[in-house]
Length: 401
Ligand code: SF4
Picture 1: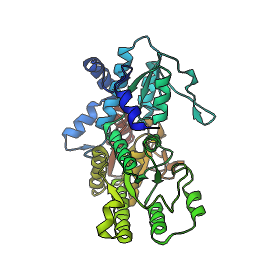
Picture 2: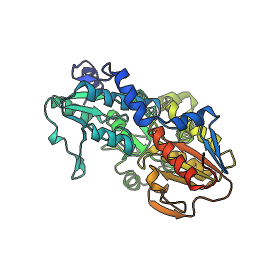
Picture 3: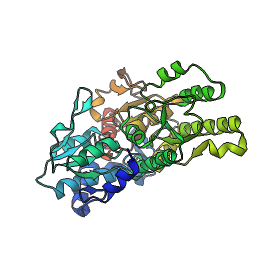
Picture 4: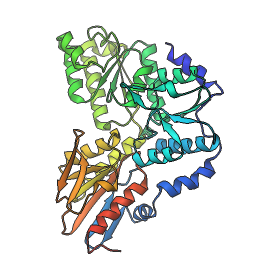
């Protein structure tokens, strides 16, 4: 499939919308009341710090809703206003945040359900409106919806589209796209749908395995078993790792994406010599600014004397789990929670661990003088952060306002 030609023709279709519908002012008030927080603004204005009694809250200097998420949510709200009587679907969570998705359900925006492991588009009918989320949708989904005669509202973040353009460039020049990402994540599924040959690497360890294969060769069967599901159909490590280009899921740990890029750069230089290097390696900077800023702010936050860190965000939010990785790296007790209800009591908190499992930790909140670091992922509204900070402050009898 010529994905570039398809996208070009979609861009010219009257049924395809990539911008809002001119209702920004109307939805702005609604968005503010549902997602913004006076307390968070107050903390921002006070140099990202709040002290009540013997509890100090230190907020990261960059956290929460990023530009791409704000834009996607606003477009979804505008879509409802613009098509008040139409059936509206969304192909996935608009962003990885339960409260935002719940608000959309209340506005009668329906989510495409999974049936037998696949999205069930059979219930979508001609003329329905379908919203594509901030992290995009695969080109096959777009084509299917277009063929069905749906009106498509594409809220894909331009940063994600930038990565799609990058893999299109790799494809055109016959480079294999090495994508740093999670192969089951919707954004990476979408990105790989625009790529030609591709290989998805989760981390540095997998990158080193591939590098070793490039330099020293290895067991092809073992390679293919290791990356089963994470490479293009018919991928052959003996012939498809001769020319490589780097791309990434926008929310991966920035430092790791950079390390992986450098690793491949050095390897191709070593294997093919500097004179021929450009024939074997390509790299464009596709790390999203918002992800970078939130991770940089987290590194600044962990530099403070903190007793613990609350990392707030959806449990399937990749950028949130990377923030927690930073806390773990600095050995600061940290709890990834998605809503205030996870705080069961002053002594019990239910939280997600880095391996994805949920656990309950007892005696998580010391009762002495306390400094609590707080950050949130790019899809977390300030209101959710406010509720959690209020809960922490309320547990401390000396911290009443
Ligand atoms: S994290 Fe970056 S890529 Fe993702 S929606 Fe936000 S701005 Fe866009």
